[in-house]
Length: 422
Image (tube, rainbow, N blue to C red; front, top):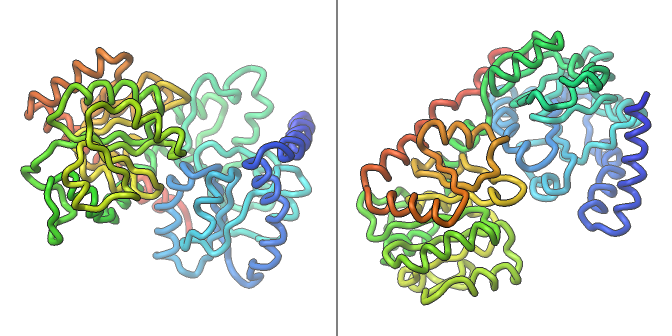
């Protein structure tokens, strides 16, 4: 089978690349250690539900489902596997799963060994994971297997004449829980009809994140301009300062919004760059002109209250940070693609992003709802921000539309659980 030949070439490629790349080395080592972890931790008397997520984003999509099952069906244990180090290394100590490890490379032998060790009662693959050997053996063993929050496009290999043989892997799933009607139509075009359109579980997740948001005294002081130990974590009805929040920004993004705010003194600027290496932070500082700038890990609420710019130079705060803003900018749109727009939109704020957003359904939905805005140039950004800054009604309406978009599309987790027999 051509697929298996390709997989072995991939396996060799990973082994060679691991000699030169730390991230690949972690993945290579983790995949080899997976069986050791499973032998040590699998309880042969337990019933396991297996969740597989490629990386951190897919984990966040699967998380609401995992946590609901763990809470409502405690008779099951959860096995969570990752493909990428960017998922495993961040969530290897996640308390919502009983066992966490890498997924071994998709060879037939690995799939057989893995499923003999775990013997899952069902499996959930999040979004784009279609590993042929694992899926065929799951089907052969009559283990219910579900694809959650999956989304399909006409340009994918499954729907091309030359990809029809590989499309057979999709028939291994018991049911698809897809994000939109187009995905359902495409699956039906190749004979797959066990499909429910439920939306994206990320909408449920961002609502969870909002409810669990951290109170950040430094951000609170930065927003209000005062230090108040009794300050609420809720947004103030009439804040002293308007705050523009830039999340997961890259240099092309920063060159645009920093240029604008160098010229406008009446708003404060909160920046959480995607890369927090010192070299990148120095670049941001070099762009800022005539601003009092503080870094989150090196400041106090007293200093933040007097600052014009607050730079978040650590991880883990971004989703809570949006609570302190009035307009959000999501980075990546001038590069490989935009980052998470929903974590900002859930706080009822307009969301701005660059042009590389066409493959992100949530971004397209925000644009259609009037809660999201695409910019291509500095002039686009300047015109849009001037409108938002000078028209309170426009600002509020756009923010309300963003929040309503998220709230309206929540509920995918309930729909999945209503169809799955536990």
